Length: 199
Image (cartoon, rainbow, N blue to C red):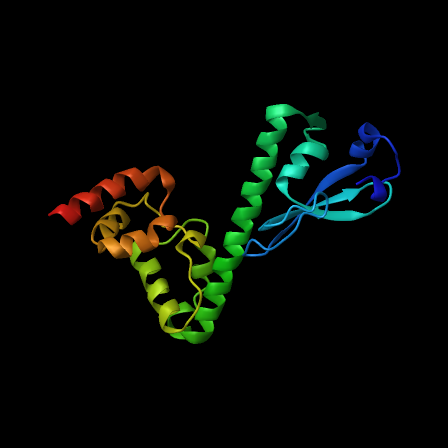
């Protein structure tokens, strides 16, 4: 970090760097932090020196240790800083999930245009799909050899008919799509399918 900075003392050097909002999701744990050389990172976040204009791609741990984080015009410290870094990471993961989901839908639009030409498929990504819709996506992805991860999508459990659709799934189907269901509903549905297995 000193090598890419204008100052020579740590307190001054640290103030030269800031988080840009840029991030890379490698989709595997094969990246290295350019600040501490720690290996096995999936996510890298960009930091830039405001004086020398150097940029580095680093892990979240190094941001917590060495890079100032600001919100509302003031520097965050301690638990506030850690919370903000977690927020940055969560936003990065959400963006990455949405990009992967859009890629799946774009591939399905080519492979099954009769079903996926409607722009509502992309428009409804944030709102979420029914269990039946996501099951169809999963089945078509398998038949067309498209990588599918249910955690990249959402099932909208605010609708009663969607809850009914989930309960009608086979246990293996439920566990394949569980990551698309809000975590707040996992306990409820886990209990439902555990009881279903006993019957």
